[in-house]
Length: 93
Image (tube, rainbow, N blue to C red):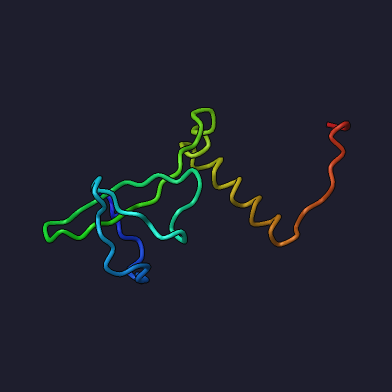
């Protein structure tokens, strides 16, 4: 199994949270974001980890399955964040 815990610096977000009558636990608002789902993991001593997930459209999955192209996109985003941009006249292409 892949490593689930990517950082051990945990912050206590709530204490003494109880399961409601329908066996649900309400997450603090700071942990809830739109379009986030969770993978749920539990260990033998009852500790639970919620691993946030996002879904990407199938039409965009090719990018994440192509490491060379993904590296180029990340490089371009880093350049843009540093202001390394130039104008291009698309009519000349």
